Amino acid sequence: MADTIPASPHSRLRLGVNGMLWSKAPPDDLAVSVRELEELGYDSYWTAEAYGADAFVPLSWGAAGSSRLRFGTAVAQISARAPAATAMAAMTLDHLTGGRFVLGLGVSGPQVVEGWYGQDFQHPLARTREYIAIVRAVIAREKPVSFEGEHYRLPLRGGTGLGKPLKSALHPLRPDLPIYIGAEGPKNIALAREIADGWLTFLFSPHHEESFRESLDAGAAQARPRRPWDEFEVVASTWLSIDDDIERAADRLRPTLALYIGGMGARDKNFHADLMTRMGYGEAVSTVQELFSEGRRAEAAAAVPTRLIEEVALIGPPEKLADDLRGWKSSMVTTLLVNGDMQALRTLGRLAV
Image (cartoon, rainbow, N blue to C red; front, side):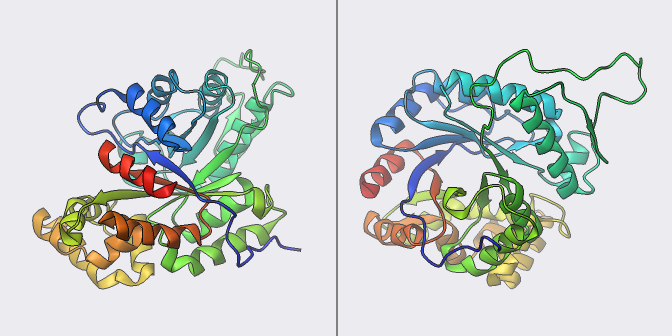
């Protein structure tokens, strides 16, 4: 029988922080900020990567002064590292954090995979499935690792002919270290539900749960899912902009949303734009993409609807945020990751108590 999602939500919404992508340079006093987040009652701190700072190194820096926070990658790109290298980094961080690390993986998009990493983007779901199988085999450390797939083979065929299956010299702290998949498309969301311990979602709206629910149920129906629903984590990343003026709060996020709609992917292969189109914002998405492609970025930002921003982010005065949080608490999301300045995070931390 398929493990379908019950209508009732998970029992508690945890609050975390997603540092997201660094631009130009690292944030100031990362380790100090992480310690304050722990004192404010936040549950976790996560990092991302695209084609600049990597996702693993900042976690080791931030975790040095922490005793309770969980740390995770949201997401580490599978094209950035061989599966064994990712498993090594994950095991190392799990030891350094005392078993508080979550490995979040994602495929990124064709522009980054082929343009930055020089790898073929085709068949992302099959590559993800094989990649995670190898990572799990390395971490489990049950035997020397060999793998024969369509996209990954260990040991290498050809070469010197001297390659042989190896077993990690490092013993894992947790042989079953949790692995989450970052996914926006329906098939990738279904894959996360089937083979992962959790789903990392971006541009999620609690007002549009039904399509996500269908994809998750489809993944559970493919085979017995790795985790029953009450053990499966749904981690949503969003932005936080606090201001008594809602439009002013939205204005701070419009350029970022315009970038994701118009610049994070080709016009006919943009997973972020596709997701927002499925949410009912197809006309606005087309307008933003057209303006962005013409280099009219300020106009593209202005064309992002406030209503869309309200659906995928937390914006406005504190009393509105408190009301909006109720919608997230009644959703399928188990952990809400927010990105904002430290003052805004302090305010939200007090509201969420």
